[in-house]
Length: 279
Image (cartoon, rainbow, N blue to C red; front, side):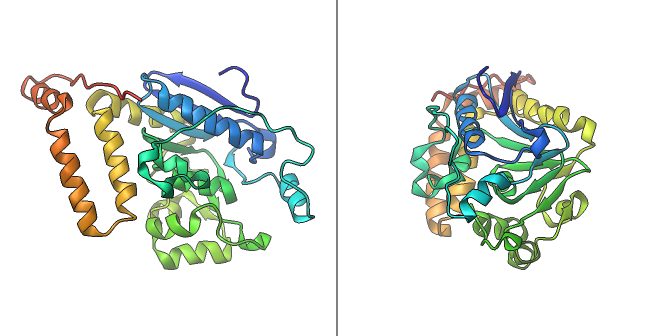
């Protein structure tokens, strides 16, 4: 879309790339940027060509969190939108059948029907870190640095971090990062499970695209969608309920054309031609 002002959006083969684009402010978030991000995620979700979505930042960082000018306005009794006209963009991404847990603030990201990988090219802080954690995977360059920041601003763990961070790295490590607001470099982030892999800075975007290309070449988009829903729904469910739903969905998958194609392509030693997701 050509009229985005604070993000960039492009589609390259099976990858949609969304770039936070306020590099002079380390891509600090504004209300307009968050509106544009949601709209772009919806566009990528609805594009049949797109198998996976990449979220990254322009310049030397991913996202420094919420714009400090907006936070200052709110801290002094103002409003985050004071004096700023927030753009109106119609966007309703995500699968509402996932339930109310995935319709609160940024949790809609977890209900989007396609994989979302964050390509972390530098600093990732505050609300920017919350958004990154709610995405499906995180690939970092060697320049990646992570900080929660909330305690040093007199705030609490916001935007889902108190829920997702312990599930990724354990409660003690989560409290360490939340309490201390210390900066975590890419290597330590990898060791604790905060990021999935470290890729050289100049190869980060291409390697992330290559990961999605591999999914597009070999995997059923419907299977990717259903697995994502299983993982996030079942993080909220007792084991028995999760098993019953998985058994139901497995029985349904055995009746799909994708299952027949998956078996046939294996026996015929060829690449599969799976159906696209129909919204």
